Image (tube, rainbow, N blue to C red; front, side, top):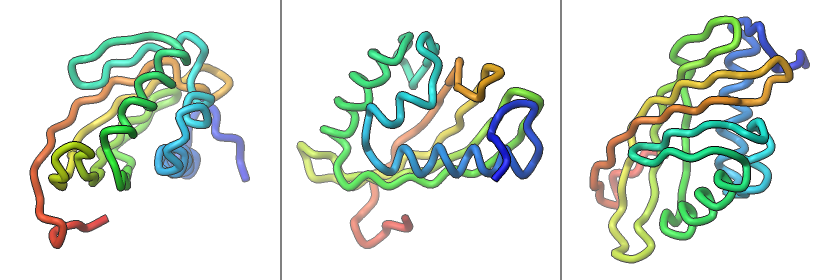
Length: 135
């Protein structure tokens, strides 16, 4: 297996996206955070924060509320040290029980070791019925 570091090829960009999908589907905040630089900068919808500790806190809260979370990421484009993806994930609101599907885009920038130093995410949620789940 090739190292998943910049400059990316189509093969390594696809593998990097799959590795991110697999990590997020683990729902393990500590594991996920290790893919990011110590001072990684995030925008997640209307939230802006920086650093692995903030990433772990954010993901811990996220997965408390978003039960039965399942994610699929798709490579959109890539350059030497950047990757853009589109994604969708489905989840059940832990409080109301409502099922939702979230559609969005992420833009990633990596350092020379392949750690993500910038993550910029935009997304929208739509309500779905449980029998409409695709993932």
